[in-house]
Image (tube, rainbow, N blue to C red; front, side, top):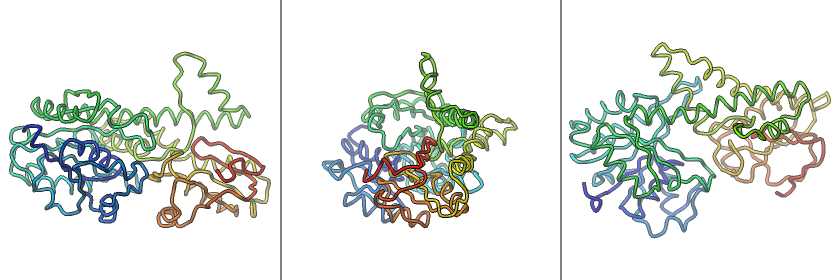
Length: 394
């Protein structure tokens, strides 16, 4: 396949797919596909509800959006970037990935290319996705079409580590696929890192985020101890950071699309293989239990009775400065405080009130005008007060 003939389909136009569609459409015709018809309509305006891209950034691109798979029939490169979440029991949910594989498989032609970016356990592409593509297309992966995996490294709200500037991991089912996929991504990124197998690339994505999860769990566990001792965690970390090889991790409520999800994919895979990963599981348990721990810490700063006390939670998104509410722990923290009779307001200027109401059943406040007994920052487990908010009208 020659560069001049690339016609790219990006399946899934969320935080991962949209940057890919925008980047490739500078050079090639791109169709952004998403089942969310409202999302497709918005992007066609153009409007990005996630607030990552302005309307100007859609201009001068060979880019269209669709919810109709018929619009993908002329495409010859399919990049699958659909969600791979976990359910309420923390079990991996591959339904979107399986459905996307079936759709793409039904569209495949000889000489096409399929690339997965969705986070999965090692072996998923080969054991689950590949057979679907093969059955739907009646084609042989690696012979009739290229197949590979390139894990996403999207960090919402991060203007420094963008798709173009990061090192993009690429892998293929064989050398021909690897070389084709590496060449393809080289058009839109500054640096690629070639993994020698798809399984290595799949595992690398999980290891990146599990490392962060385990280290944050360590900081969270230490913060519980230091809080009991009356020792300020922030100053301890500041002093510790004076050592040249100290890793800069901080305590906080862990949410988002990666760190709070990816470990469960590896844990399930390891359980099937009979390999216990107790440290990773314990780290997950520590971070999942932090809303309860932080709620207890907040209660310890309030005088009884709690009923009638007013607390402001500053932050609804899973981290500051973004609209991303995936797996945010703020609603859970809010419920724990409400059960104690505490009046709770939530303020986050980046998250629309309608989103908060539809997703969690409560509205955030427009601005901070009240006086609160305590102000809490869930992202780093900070407690301010009792005093008037220093963030008024911010």
